[in-house]
Image (cartoon, each protein chain N blue to C red):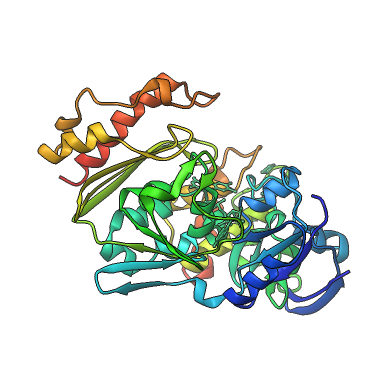
Length: 157
Length: 264
Ligand SMILES: Cc1cc2nc3c(=O)[nH]c(=O)nc-3n(C[C@H](O)[C@H](O)[C@H](O)COP(=O)(O)OP(=O)(O)OC[C@H]3O[C@@H](n4cnc5c(N)ncnc54)[C@H](O)[C@@H]3O)c2cc1C
Ligand code: FES
Ligand code: FES
């Protein structure tokens, strides 16, 4: 079987995978990083969103072997020890989740938006979330959370 | 997914050589269509040859008055490119309307055009702007490229390298998206090109097509009013759970008028 090496949340990792092994399977099943969820497995819901070299991608539609040499960030890599990342803290403060299934993808997607745009408008957040589905919240508090999280990340309160 | 052997090509020549080996190899750009297709077991390639590592297949540049976009250029790069915005804002807007941010970070113009999905956006821009598709072996005019539903003039194993867009005087794209996927239920790309008016329609029929009646009407009078009463031919339109053929035929007229109205 081919082997693959990448950096996940700052740590070098490697493993043996099949050609068809998805990045999300590698993260969850080989590395035990089950924070990244699989909601649809059809590239629609965004629950599996991770960052590959800083860009948000759906890890259910990305082969593990394509990540050779890449830097991957998952929701597990955001917090600094006990201290939540500003985007996680914003979801907590704004009640941005109910069942929590979509939340890792929402947070990784929100962080990617904040990296491109430190003060997104409500409209920009809603458009950005085209690829992240939530079946519980009705989105309002997710949108509020991402706006607050983006401001906190860029040092505005 | 059936198992396959994965290869990362390092150059066009390397990709070509790898395509020559294996029983049934296939090319992969961003995998945004290919991976879902493999998951559904609609294809069973022996080898998947990833073009993602070939740096010179991706990029945006001007060559004189011609805009050149590499096949592996991501939708996000086109949508956010100042070069594209200055050359033809409609093309950047079209790229920004595709799918969602994660799809735009991975999906490529080459993969979208090679796939020729009846509901894809890019084929309408390539046909509407009269672009040239440059492959590893030849140049193909847009008018000869799109041959049918998911069918193109590409030969087995032929690799798209880049697209060359001649500068239009003005152009606009208007789409009625499927609210879930954002694929076009109907999208109309209208351009006043150096060689005349071009109206390319996607989403409506099995394959992107030019609307000769609208082109003739706009040639005499470039205004939304010139299109009054013109629409698609319901007999040639797709009909599915998203929209009936009659509705699509009607939308062809509405989207074309909206596109024209936005640039007069
Ligand atoms: C959720 C979702 C929503 C989407 N919404 C839209 C939308 O609104 N509008 C829209 O237009 N599209 C949409 N798409 C499609 C998207 O735009 C992708 O560009 C498209 O799926 C092609 O993907 P890709 O570039 O990754 O190519 P791949 O999936 O990697 O390849 C597609 C096909 O093209 C072939 N190919 C790829 N590159 C080349 C090349 N250089 N030369 C020859 N053959 C090649 C491959 O062999 C394969 O058969 C959506 C996709 C998803 C998953
Ligand atoms: S699990 Fe990847 S998009 Fe839904
Ligand atoms: S909180 Fe339940 S799916 Fe979003």
